[in-house]
Image (cartoon, rainbow, N blue to C red):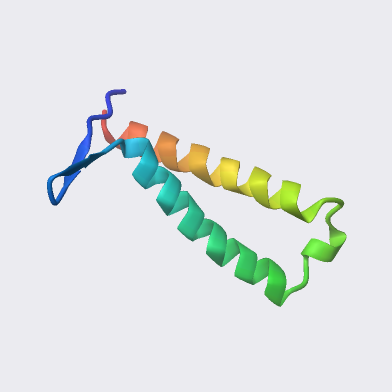
Length: 70
């Protein structure tokens, strides 16, 4: 698994930074779904739950990109 920097208009970004952005965008859709169906009222600590979902999405994104790079 080898990640190299990504060049966007002359600025180099670490690949994990773009993966974090992608996971955050996916989290926005998850938040909207949980708000629409009011699922967060069943969760003990909503902020901790959202952080855990973000970590799950980020790790899945990293694993997906690592597998694709083989």
